[in-house]
Length: 237
Image (cartoon, rainbow, N blue to C red; front, side):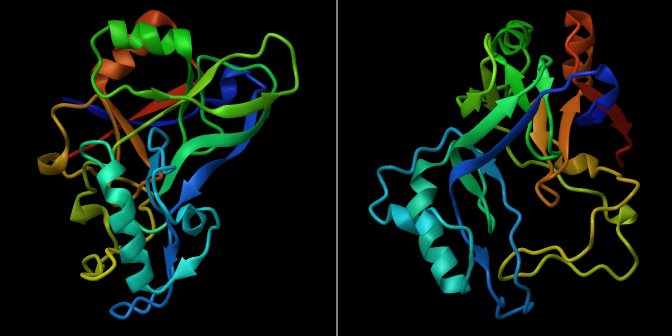
């Protein structure tokens, strides 16, 4: 199986832009007792509704917290997560709220870690039998008539980069907070043993800003004429 990264295709000529933030989120971690880092950069779960949580205000403001508070809030959220989800500091939940304008293609990817899709193209891909495609509602205000219905794809974190593409001397993830201190490598190599065989769309667990897909996904998009994104093959070992 071949795997590809997904990025915005600026050559497609679409002018659409979305400026939106998630409804809720976990805090980052402040001064991890083990690695001393203050950080966030979590995963996105737009299908997760936190309204059953009693202390909802704790999830409405982005901020760093001591790891004990972060872990307490994780336990409140964990029962609401979809199967296969994982939490990390800064993970966000619920629909993206904001504004949008311009001319949109089938896929919209203004930021590397967020992939939006119009409803009809999503339904066509699902009819092709692609696995792991879950579109979630957004709360976007459009400054135009005939605005599209944009859904956010909920993309689970699965898979890791191969150690050979990390800088020499890279330390393992922090055993307490899970932070991997190495920046995203310029030339990614995927760890084949960690890649899923049940999903055609997923994101890296250790670099959540990288969205990946299988060759089945790429072939279906080309066959259906769905554009707005570009696909780049990645090696694995």
